[in-house]
Image 1: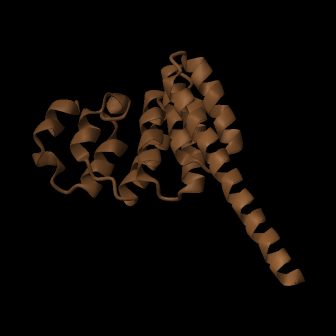
Image 2 (image 1 turned 135 degrees about the vertical axis):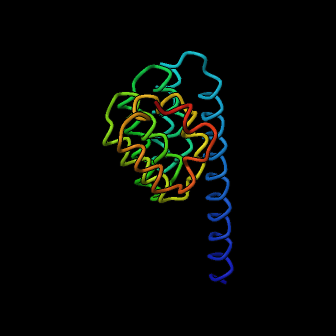
Length: 167
């Protein structure tokens, strides 16, 4: 007689737990939508920071916050978020590429080359994008950039935009 009662209590507890989790996820989804709709970048950063306190492994929110930091010209904060993404998802080529872009923008040539090489190693291979990306304007003329591009893409000299984009 005691067993059916315990089984019933267990079933009720499981149902309550499932309901509680789905309610939390629904609330998190609403908070995320609220952040994305926030027009003021400073408020969006605050909102996303609150979401990340509740969901510290949510790489999508780190990406969104990093992009917002870029809007605010807070490049080192954006780089920190991209590094967090790489910590959570080693080999995330988009995060590697974006660190390389930002490092070039702030004239950190060696750091930019390092992360651009990491992006290549993780599978990034859109050489045209690199040659046309305005963020890489600061490193295109460097010897390190030219060597990396030749190393990673053997036909780089035959690319039509190579000679026009690199002084």
